Image 1 (tube, rainbow, N blue to C red):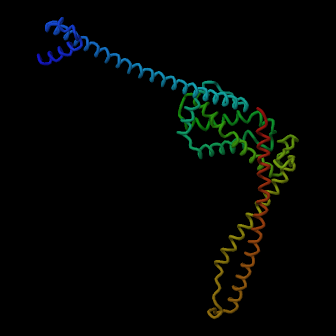
Image 2: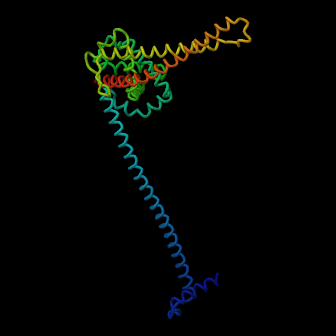
Image 3: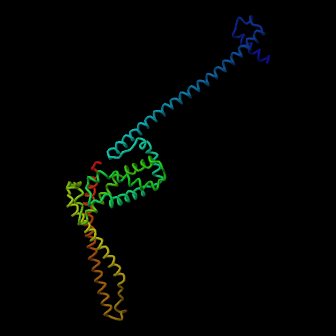
Length: 327
């Protein structure tokens, strides 16, 4: 210790230079202790300042990160708000009344919907509803398009509600109403496409759908304008072509089975030549009929393909016409 003190004392003397004779050893010890204490305080202060500076930097980074997070949340909120506005506007355009609470629950409601119905089950639900209401409320041979336009949304909503309340067990009306509107929103075009199919099916019978369009003409994508009478006539012809194709298919099935059962043994192995001759003649006749009916089926398929294109254009035109009817 004394040796170390002497070394420090020597350093102090070198600093003092010509004034070393003014400093004795005891004074040196006092100064050295004070210097040491001062240095220690300085080191502690420096450490404290460094720690504070580190904390300040960390807090600054934290606040910067928080600001970034806040900006992201603001942007996300803006996007969601835009979605809500668009959704609300869509429902208003379609004549669907919905509360703000329902809109805010949309994300949660989608989760509930997906837990209870997959995509295939939703399509089946839509088909079932269209089948049911087309045989009850919407008898297209008796009602008019204005009645359909005024009531379609309400009828579909009620039908969806009845279906989902048997599957989604909840007493929360907001949940059921919200899910009902989500199904309607996502499948509105599908509903009307299926309704258009039902309208065309109703036009195949003798009474047709002469009352439904109330004298209005329907225009397809080719600019062809269809009256109720023209639609009924086309659908009867189209159904006749489909029936003819099915008739030829069934006949071919029967002929192929008959050919398979018509076994002709060789002339040498035949006991009765007359029986052999008859069987051979029968086989040739069946083969000839198969050839003729195969050609008939080929022509029928081509005719169906041509008429099916017209049918799809007409179906789209009818879908567009009933969709355009405001509630």
